[in-house]
Image 1: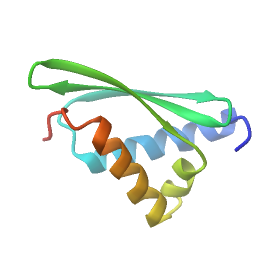
Image 2: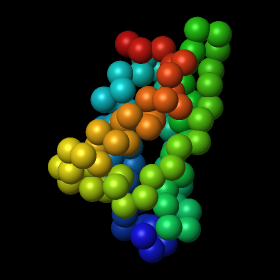
Image 3: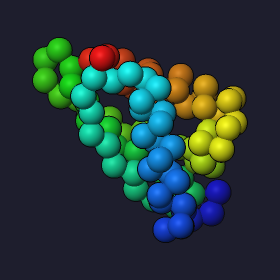
Image 4: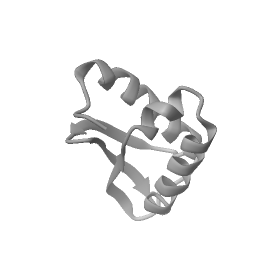
Length: 90
């Protein structure tokens, strides 16, 4: 993947919002930042003992997931679930 472009930022944010909604987190904040060849997704979520911060990563599969690639979506959700396991679910 080449350097993520400003034109890809809005679709990337939309993809992250959709994926995080799919995880059913009860309370969370997130940011999407372009990095060389990938996206950094910083997520803060409520846990039983306060808040947790995790930095997730995604490449071209992030935009593929929003375009209907079920395999890319499932892979990202599975990976992110591991990192956000302590987050409260709503």
